[in-house]
Image 1 (tube, one colour):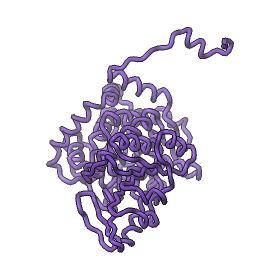
Image 2 (spheres, rainbow, N blue to C red):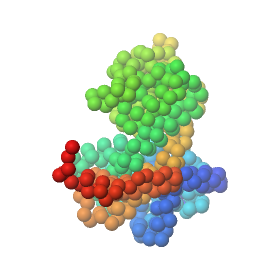
Image 3 (cartoon, helix red, strand yellow):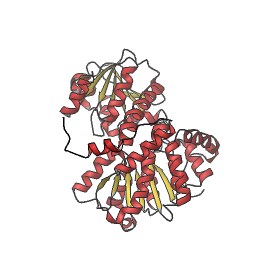
Image 4 (cartoon, one colour):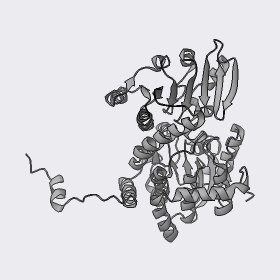
Amino acid sequence: MENSDIKDINLAEGGHRKIDWAEREMPVLRTILERFKKERPLKGLRVSACLHVTTETANLMHTLQEGGADVVLTASNPLSTQDDVAAALVSYYEIPVYAIKGEDNATYYKHIGIALDHKPHITMDDGADLVSTIHKDRRELLDEVVGGTEETTTGIIRLRAMAADKALEFPVMAVNDAMTKHLFDNRYGTGQSTVDGIIRATNILLAGKSVVVAGYGWCGRGFANRVRGMGAIVIVTEVEPLVALEAVMDGFSVMPMADAVKVGDIFVTLTGDINVIDKHHFEGMKDGAIVANSGHFNVEINIPALEEMAKEKRLVRPYVDQYEMPDGRNIHILGEGRLINLASAEGHPASVMDMSFANQALAAEYLVQNAADLSKNVHSIPEEIDREIARIKLDAMGVQIDTLTKEQVKYLNSWEEGT
């Protein structure tokens, strides 16, 4: 297709096989796709999506397409694109894609602009880049936007800040806040895929290493527990007292980052904030320290400060930059500070993205049906959607659960009976 910008269309066959493989692990999204094919709830709608271009995202795009949507996809991270998947989407599904793994920032934002030239009725974001660009630079598009969906914690933070400033001009569904998203995707998906990314990039043994986890949200919880299971000594850094207390009760050491840098071998940021690892932290790190990000944008690590400090930078392995400090110490940054689980690995397993992207698809449908009644704010996924996704997932896994009896329902809804 001429209206795409991808690396190589000849990669399509391999990408198509990978998309099919992922689809086998996505029964919830498959169920939604079959209904969408019959009902066509998104017919006539233009959707611009800024998401990681992976096999799981490809299945979401196909689902939206079968629901009647006119879909365009661009990357939400310059290093997360799977070029063969991008080619397959263009060749097999005729979905325009603007994404090339390793593209520079100028190309990245050019692609976002092209995706917005689609004049979307619905935006689908992973970090709020489409929404923020519309509000800052493309306000002529606002009249046609019905609403948006947001996948990540970082994006939700940005959007809630916009809403608090009365700057948000259309409703956005907080997909990240759905229970079937953050309890599973963030915890089990990020937990496993971050370990995968670090191992693929470095081939190090985690057992016996001191691993510093910056942030004990759902992503941090997942990673901390998985890396502990591989024999690592885990240290958590936090800013929220309740969350820090939970980390202590879960059996982890908790300390400020300024203390953790003295003992840590591996550092992973999972916060969504800026300069979580900063210049003064680099000054205290041990020789050979490995630093990675699995939160969102690469601003979590102050790489510009490190580059100013270092006397030399060299690529020692794919996705591993070594910075030699004036005192002879070496500090290693993985994946240019971008999401390591997507930079050097393949992101979350399809079975967990199944629920996340089911939320995306159903959130788009919900927007179409209810946009007129939704305020210009960030809205939660309705509980009934969340529960239905969980029900379909359990059915697909062959898991059955109990049902309350009439007597139990009555008891739970009454106050007369006591001890």
